[in-house]
Image (cartoon, rainbow, N blue to C red; front, side, top):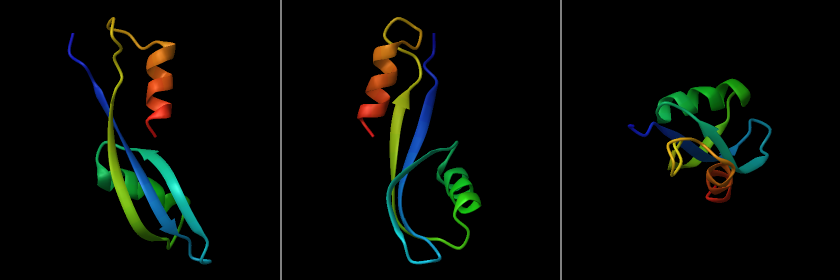
Length: 76
């Protein structure tokens, strides 16, 4: 069974009102998709920094279990 992967992007932004938002995480097919979603939520924001994180949806036994979900959350 081939593992499908997800991509999580973490952003640091400044909103149009000047508020600094750190560790804003979004999933996307690629970085452009994640940026598009970000701009839908925060119009006219300034993206100060972005990081890509890879994770696997398929667990050790070919299915997603509780420990795999916790591992995805903790690595954020």
